[in-house]
Length: 216
Image (cartoon, rainbow, N blue to C red):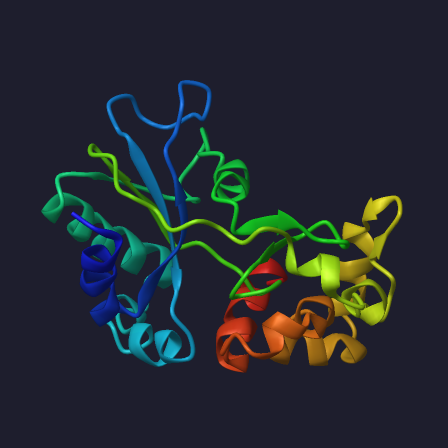
């Protein structure tokens, strides 16, 4: 099995491999699995695809998570692997640590993960644990932030990303006001300011969905 063959299985569901690594005993992955692949949305077609799926039509809660379980679970089963998800805990799988271990995601200047292709709009729908060692392409040599003028640092209208860390109260307080409508409808300004995010293909509708779940 190759990365290219797995990508071909993911393509009809508008998913892509957002990085992978060969885990060791301290990585918190299930025993007996030699490769872990992190899966994320392939934009811009992902949102148009997923929102017409049955989980988005039945009126039940958590349609995106339920879709992820069904689709990634089936792919994992077909490959003789195991599907793992960033939701459904506790206990929770260490998805941030796994993302960093791929070498394709880094901690950004505002503390959020930044991905080499999705920027600050990175999200993971699940992970695919495989029993065999899959050859992985080499990751980038450095974070994209190292060559960036870092507009994310000053983009938040209430300065929620400062030296003291993420000010959750300031962020939610802003989102609860009319002035926060831009973030609610279009996505977090700090995330959108990332030059890679601007070209990642994430739609405003997808960002609004996640913002409504973050700030009901």
